[in-house]
Length: 405
Image (cartoon, rainbow, N blue to C red; front, top):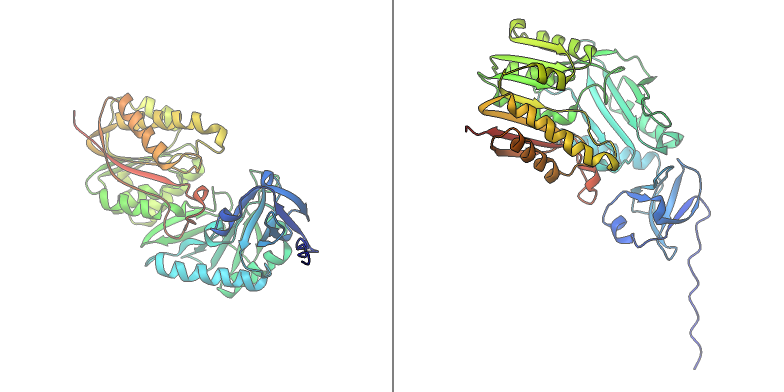
């Protein structure tokens, strides 16, 4: 009997590539867009280069971009196709079609590309349509080495121009976590006035946090607007006062806005006036939130919004973050009237939804009160998340009611 010929191992591609060293083929095939460096074996290529991801047997698995740091590879496509102009244009077209479905009327500021959620890992694009100048400004945030890939950046620029974008601002924190937004092309006004379901919001695109506004809270602001009528509202960690304006337009009796940044408080005041709201019904304070609550004495409000910056920027910070959230809830509930409403949010993927809800239970225990959970949700639908990528589901929002004793 003739001996069977031994199958030769697949030849590695000549270009940049990375090979799995751990059994993650299924996770990648199901849509998880990250491969951590410790799960990779042989890697050929430089960070930022388009490369082929091979399974443990050396067969094609995906194509994406090589990374530096703990994440070694970001997956762009499971097809054997180039990651270039055609793929970027297709992804942008898909993203635009989704936004046409979910953004809603009278809204000129929204997220066009949500990184991994839109299968463009490492790239986030927010669009701001300025009501005053009529210009459309895109703000691009780059996460990782993809910012160094000239071909992908050129394809993205071309796609944005094709959508009628007049100017592009870029925040690329590679090597600098505090990197500021910088002009890339076109003329962009620093200060813009945008609409969100008819509400006018003022933003500073160059000096603001994130890309100017917290667009992921559009659903949350709509809920506050629905619930605010006749209530005294306290907005903590208010940034530029989006929740405050929503409450004012919803018929709140009075709104108190608190944030540590004087510049943000100034924009909150501008947004309040821009919507034709009564200045006497709004008090804006540039103050440290814990200090403000400590000094508030027995003052109480009917609706309290607590949306702090991330208390858990890393997994190591998670335990301290849970304690900090519980302390914030305790203070917030102590300053909430019986039967009042409490909206709390966490913007850290390192704090799972259930764990965040547990911090509310702990805060209520410390405040010696009981609360009802009325609703829970996450980011607005223009921030889609992949089902196979729980790390992208970062925003937790809880709406609760304080029960009378």
